[in-house]
Amino acid sequence: MARQARAKLFGTDGVRGEANSGAMTVENAVQIGRAIGVLCGRSSRHERPRVLIGKDTRRSGYLFENALVAGLCSVGADAYLVGPLPTPGIAFMTVGMRADAGVVISASHNPYGDNGIKVFGRDGFKLPDELEVQIEDWVADPAPLLASLARGLDIGRAHRVDDAWGRYTVKLKTTLANDLTLDGLKIAVDAGHGAAYKVAPMVFEELGAEVVLLNGRPDGVNINEGCGALHPEGLARAVVEHGCQLGVALDGDADRLVLVDEKGQVVDGDHTMALCATRMKAQGTLRGNTVVATVMSNYGFEIALREAGIDVLRTDVGDRLVVEAMRRGGYNLGGEQSGHLVFLDHATTGDGVLAALQVLGILQREQRPLSELAAVMHTVPQVLLNLPVREKPPIHTLLAVSGIISEVERELLGQGRVLVRYSGTERKCRVMVEGRDAEQVRAHAMRIADSVVAAIGA
Image 1 (cartoon, rainbow, N blue to C red):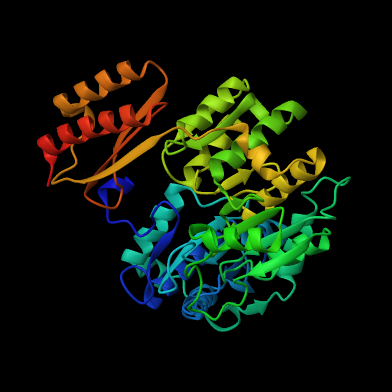
Image 2: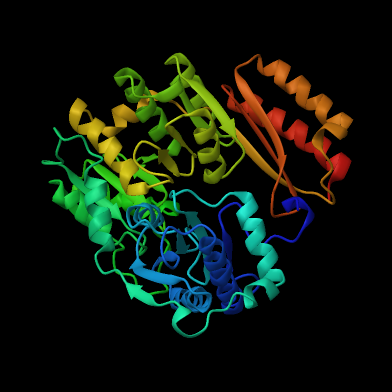
């Protein structure tokens, strides 16, 4: 059944919403656990399916951890609980422990009152659409799950995995080149009171850096609260105040990275990707001479990579879509402006700490400050307008709108970009225009926006 034709439980990054409401209820979590257990039971390499469960630091994680365990054990699967660990750590441990699946309980960068569930397959990659649709079907109609309930000795068990964070820490350290250390560096780390509060400072310190830790005392409700990757302003101040060479900001589940240079300037995912891509090309390690980015990456990113002889393949928004395109094309670097950065030679999903290590390696090898390194690309002026609309017909069917879009694209003369798309979750149309001249860009964006409002404005 096509996902567009049915009510969806899974979004682009798993199930997510307010804890104890909507899709994120304990009842749904039990059924999701059962569904995962039944799916894994069909192809498990073990006597009984093994499913790893990790979480971030929000209070409602206890609810959903226990609900998932109950669901898994009820259909004869064993659950392995690793506690708070970054999302990429769960993906890594799923593969390393030869588990049949890995489940992350996290709402990533959302406020503490939200939570989510995302699932990795035994290969460490997020489940394909068809398996998510199967889980959705079973949650909507759990009769097949109830027919699979275990009895007696067939009921599953739960196990604690106490050293998961240690194993993951060792894995991360191996991604820094063997001839490098972080000796002499002073790094500010904003853990966002999230899943990497223990792992991140330990990795950098054990590699030789002096770490100034911010927001590393989670209490269940302070995750992402005015800190982390979405709020790097506090980190920027700390970098300057403490004389750090670099600042690292992570989100709640640490799959996203935002950097701050030694001057306190924020370095986003586009700049980080451009920096890493040019070095990987020089080393001959950039597969396919291509970087995968989303439609939201700045046009300046495309200009910088084009000048370096590197191709850019764009996808729609979502790190999952980026990874899918990377796997199809055999590419090993991709990501989003927001900080989801994927190095497929080292990980199966975005990893904030791993991405920071790649940049720190360049910093140490070239002995240049991040402010200079990040100048590999220059952000071009961008205007993004969010317009309420009463309906969402295909843009190409709006003849006046598509005509003006074509005119603007011609006037930009290949020195800019136009993107007009609907929000996936709201009744809004997003109009984005980029180019070298800020006033021209705003005028173009307003012209397109006026045509959208005239055609379908709310």
